[in-house]
Length: 441
Ligand SMILES: Cc1cc2nc3c(=O)[nH]c(=O)nc-3n(C[C@H](O)[C@H](O)[C@H](O)COP(=O)(O)OP(=O)(O)OC[C@H]3O[C@@H](n4cnc5c(N)ncnc54)[C@H](O)[C@@H]3O)c2cc1C
Image 1 (tube, helix red, strand yellow):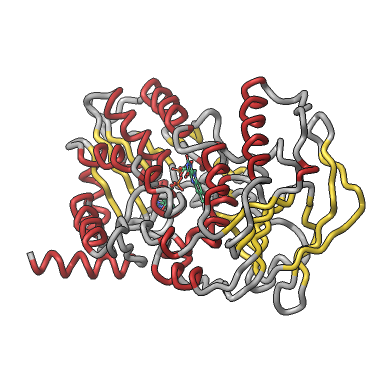
Image 2 (cartoon, rainbow, N blue to C red):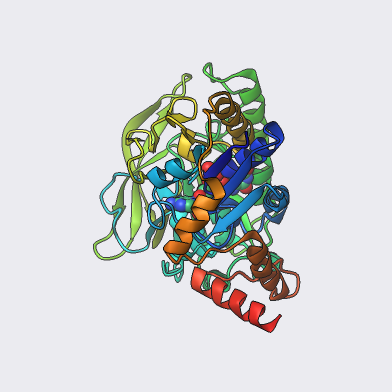
């Protein structure tokens, strides 16, 4: 008997699950519901605009959505347009894949001052995610603090540090490009509670910081260990960290001459307060040390770093919808190896929290698909027809995959020379452009 599966969210977690069903159950049909007209989650709205190669993974997801047994149901929000309980009535299995888009809080005084942002908001803003279109960060600043020492912190630093010509070949949205290019920022501080050994950079991304046109990385040579002593790390981790230390050591040779911007790697600094009354004036940090087990210890000494904007890159969490059980401590949907409850499952960041690379989602989603197939019941539910009836009754304007392809083509056609696309931002803009293109055709 053919089963119908619905996947909620079209990011990597959801798309690898969709392809998994196609490969492992030759009879099934899959609907992918996405709250935005545009698919692929953080590939469009998170991955850095100057990392177009990484974004190319979406080509594989497009192939999945082009399969006859898959439907893309864009512009439909679960929890608003349709409830999870309704999906469970219509489909044989429901796979939640709606990500972890809410920024973790730092939990220090001053965090709610204007011009303090979480990375989801700030990255969403420069990537044209409609939720953050009106964030309006003030980049008319001399000094910026980025809290966090991972790849997202590097992404944010590059957007602030790169030149117009470096960014002209990206899909950075116009309003963000204007704000970044007219910004007088000269000093960008990345702060980490721990040291360079523990920093979560991947080496390719770290190396990029040594080759920027108008910005130089600044390292404190005293922070770079001759030999790494970290008993808690695997041999593989140690090798990766050694490579990072080597790269950071090479930054000591990068000339500051004819560079107007500096990206400071501020290790062993734990932010304890964002300073300022009505606007950000700086970040107060406690100096720390790290022992051979990776544990952080405060020295009691404080240091103030001047800044007029603060962006925290300290991870994110999911949010509960409907009656889905939620683990508030971990910021994920309550699940056991992907199973939430009878016929209800979770994959991606919603399942395991915000960590790992795009590829990490693949095996993880495939494991959950295996579990779902093993747990299939007798089936026989209304499936895709039931969904169509419900959405029609509710008058929801669905964006199909073919319609998304039209929007995609319009974005690519509107690209300035050298750039991959000019993004539409809001669903309203996308649908208006789509309607106009369909009338013209
Ligand atoms: C800033 C940033 C940069 C990154 N850069 C890289 C990188 O360069 N390389 C790399 O390997 N990894 C990178 N990652 C990690 C990678 O993006 C994630 O591993 C991956 O996107 C997680 O996939 P997901 O499907 O769980 O979530 P998401 O990608 O967030 O997808 C969730 C989808 O669900 C949709 N949705 C949300 N709510 C609803 C709802 N109620 N109804 C219907 N749909 C809904 C969302 O719109 C979204 O499309 C980055 C992450 C971030 C935050």
